Length: 165
Image (cartoon, rainbow, N blue to C red; front, top):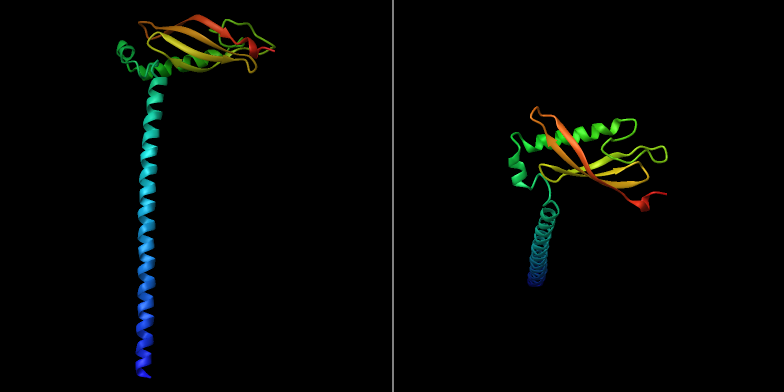
């Protein structure tokens, strides 16, 4: 009886070891496959990030932030000037007839205001404007006077005809 018990214990121990070996072998293979997939995914994401960074740099090529020659033109911090110009243009939206830089009259009882601006360099601004219904773009020259004031000159405006009903 003791021999049978030892035999059963030996077989049971052997089966436990076999199952443990198979489990850890599969678990190790699963972990290796998962690590390989994650490595591949990381490489793919790095490539995508590089492509998106390149696209962003190309899209932002014409901007005061990227144009070093325009940045060096200013005696003071160009970012502060950009903020001042932006705030000044948005402040002009508060007029009863809308922003005076936009050379279109009030349309359907709604005045035109500037929504977004982009400083292209140390002289030019491109902006988007609307009255809530009609949309357009505007090209503005700006000048920083010796006393620090900013003056504006509208060069061109474009009102999209397909937005006027």
